[in-house]
Image (cartoon, rainbow, N blue to C red; front, side, top):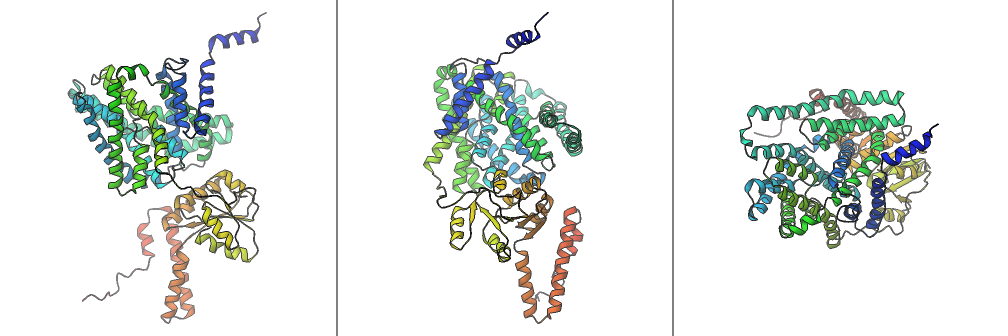
Length: 594
């Protein structure tokens, strides 16, 4: 009688080699903490680990490209997670930055970088392709650096993301231009080109329709009848399916995953999807950086060191100059312009696709392709070092946490997030009635100042779920969001309503549009910060004009009722004329003109 356990063990031993996986995991586990500990960052740790175990290090791996093809899924999953944070309304609000700022930077950078190849004596077509490839920034590296620096939700971070999104879109027309520049490429018919555009648009339309009408019902059905692992499998199916669809339509897989994330960004399953995908994203993105490190061909660098030594700084310096100039033209502060230039100075993973296509069409020789690939990888390796150098030369003065306590096991009946001028006033009626308050803020100096006036404020970021738990949000009777940043307020409200559905959330709104956004996020109550004070001013004006107290209160009640009706109409959309009719205007009054 055969031994099934022994047979299975033998099959596992001969059929699947675990050594490469162990080596990859060991390299990451050893290198990344060491590099983070010495201040060089996780990206450089992955790159160094890849070089160490690759063909030109210890030799555990000899085909870095095969690993890169698999690890590109990390970039795909990363873009999906970014898409989950980008509601369609927010993406629409960024349209000017995506197509305005993105177009300006890409076009000027292409014009500047093609001269590197021409100056070195290469043909115009090859110079165009090489410079254009370097324009396409590494989405993986920049996104990871933005996340490490906590800038993903900040305005300067969103502007960089907008440019990266445009560059992802630009790969499609750039590949078409490469095909046109190829020997005989000009003979392609207009029908062929229109057919390619139509296929791409059809792929986008199919993904949008599926996201609009199929994805949310599918997840609702799986949530009712499926196990947790089925939900995880469905999340991966959506991401990879969108990537395959976009790839089949001639677009980038990362763009497909991003669109899938955007389409699910307003789903009630958004947070669960993000939690399901996150472990795969982190592992595969780390594997991507390991693969980039392995792909650094030291033989090519040694053979063509002169060309590479000239090209790397030439491409990077020119690109940084263009990015800085564009940032300043678009009125970005000097520090933001310099930081953007340093972050986006490298070439990116889409350059490999462009160079491979150009080699296939005969525009680049295999040797030129190898040189350009080495140039791109070296620029990617140098980027974390440049970030460190930038931080050393332009040090940021970190706020001191001396004398400030961090959030831990708070038990107040009301959780107040943000203790600026709005939060301070909102706290007074509650404290006057003896209700216990847990107050958190992110400004250490404001926390110290508040203590001088008899307030105990703890240091904590309300956008983080662990901080909300530590601040007692799950046990509170009420959460008041009084922060001063619009995006922060929206993020806290959405997170609190999702994680603590039984706790009412009262939120400060900065504008009328922000108030509508908070209502959509589930705020139990919102108040525009200037609304009540403006009505008080109007009440005083009417009183001083001689109106009776009864008329004054009746008038204010009418104004409030009209405003509430306008908010209700604007929530459902498409009723702009009816909403305007509720506003008291002065167009029919005399204005003193002759």
